[in-house]
Length: 121
Image: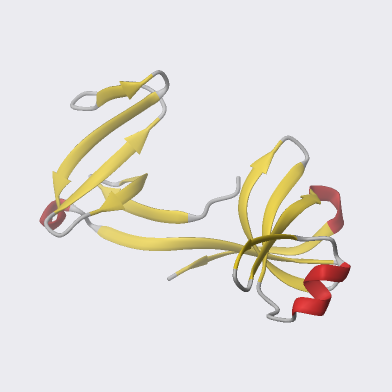
């Protein structure tokens, strides 16, 4: 599973999360007590930040064609990746899309990436 974003540990379980100043929104894909459906397959519960046992940011990284990337998402056998090497000629030679100034993204075949690692910060 590819993860990129906040995670909160609440009542001993880990949830994708969205922190605010005094509250944290916890998300899940199936119903549970106290979670409200916000759209089909998406449930949310807002809890006070003081009740959260741990709040971390998770980022997945990899190498593709020997270059460093952040993995943003996965779709079937493809990974949505963002180049972190900082060299425009390399990004251009790899055929990456310009997402924003200095930000290059593309789709990499999952079988071609190596050193897939999850980092908690």
